[in-house]
Length: 106
Image 1: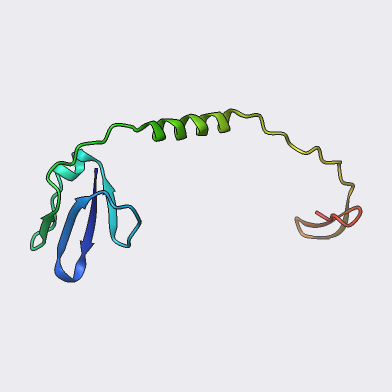
Image 2: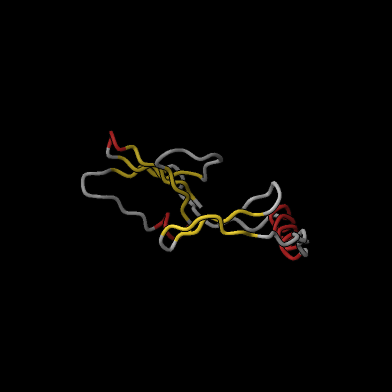
């Protein structure tokens, strides 16, 4: 993987190691796209790294993925809401003004 950064003022595209933080005008590329990168006529490409191979998943990556799957599979408990009595208080054409009972008007 690699990070592509554009320097518009210099008409330059810089392709280097994967960045650790986001910057304006920078994009992360997979190895295939990093190796096949072309730029517009008149632009220069500066390649800071030669090998853009995809890294193997680390144990931390696999643990994070497993935790995300577990979290997504957990049942979500919804609070049971009591029905609100709604009364129409005004009408204008096809629009209606509704008022719910109590302090919780909807």
